Image (cartoon, rainbow, N blue to C red; front, side):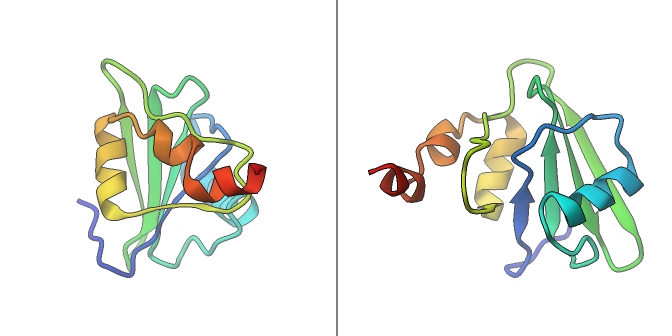
Length: 118
């Protein structure tokens, strides 16, 4: 079980990830791609290219934990790879995302992104 509190941030990688990646490769992707500290206690979400699988990495205080999900039907929401800022979800958004709800409006057409194109 993922223990989150109000201070837990949920960072989503905008680049697709090979789902064969394990602790060390995800750890290095958090540092290099997301530019975050993997030991911070925040949750880091990685999605494969076809959007059928995702892995989440976080540090629970005693070690690294990976939570993985493969969709039986449907796809995870599409992430805008051209988004300038980091993509940080709320816990409610993450719960919806992990269930497979379409959050395209949030990820592709968020107000911050729209104002950058005007």
